[in-house]
Length: 288
Image (cartoon, rainbow, N blue to C red; front, top):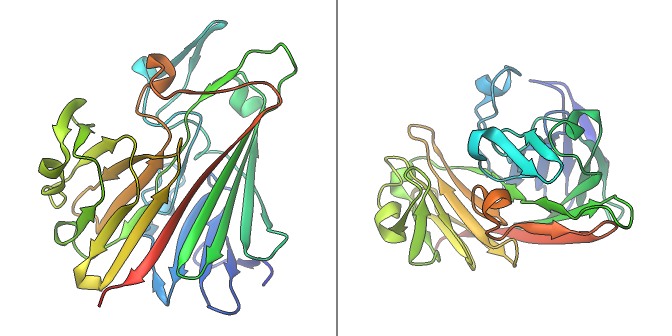
């Protein structure tokens, strides 16, 4: 099915799999944002529609893209050998317009963001970021390709990459999350913590980071569904975030922790002319 432009309740594009009826809804002009994913007849993503309708407010919902950093930097400044650059939390990719096209094999869509005047003041590197979203049976497969467009002899490009999907649930306190490592970092205090102690507070609000995660499963008994995030290194850090009373849970794949471009912890470096491919998949299942 070709991309279909819908103007209600705001302009957005729809890609639908003709066999399954699964669907992606996208607003590339708002940070390459996936606003909806319908799978097996259900809407999987949460979106605060009232907040989205006000462009002056940050988005709460869908699947924002985090690049070239995940989290924040001290003083919102990126220190580089050539100087310091202002760079706000989660970077600029979620704020800029992207291009959009159908994939050649008709399995999904691709969105792209390239460097330009709007990025050079914050991140002095030529880059191309391509995000491919593919509908699979009861799943959404995601591939990100990051390209350093510099010339031989240019500096390597440091970055982190992440996704920030909001998954709709009736009650964050009624879900459970399986598969995370035993230890995590509590983003609220930036201190090490026991993951189990954090997960019992999903209904109160948590923000935790785990490195080297495998498959992470969100189980929602009231909805009769489970959603598994499958990761592959270096895209195998996972953030869990809840913000009650919002009926959502974020299960986010990141490549690195907060402030990685300063600390060097899991920071990615890409030489001029090189590409890096990152992969993850969300798989939906019905509970017996």
